[in-house]
Length: 80
Ligand SMILES: [Zn+2]
Image 1 (cartoon, helix red, strand yellow):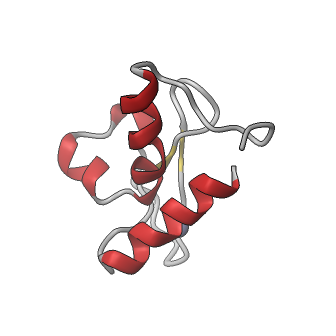
Image 2 (image 1 turned 135 degrees about the horizontal axis):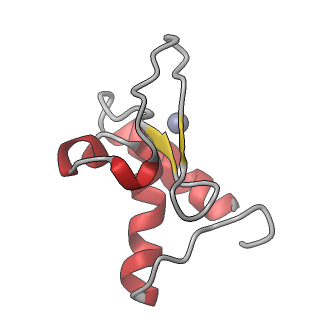
């Protein structure tokens, strides 16, 4: 979980327009997110299109896990 947080925050740092569209948790559909600006995009993680996913910080934390394990393995509060 700590690794995914570092990658998530790193995505915000690299590009300021990377925000929050949807959380990857709970598996497997994820959940909608309300931003600090009080905006809710209304889509769950598995409903994002490619453009939305590219602007979603939660996507950057999941991408290396998915490509390494070649499956939809989600970080949870019990994993590292
Ligand atoms: Zn964030």
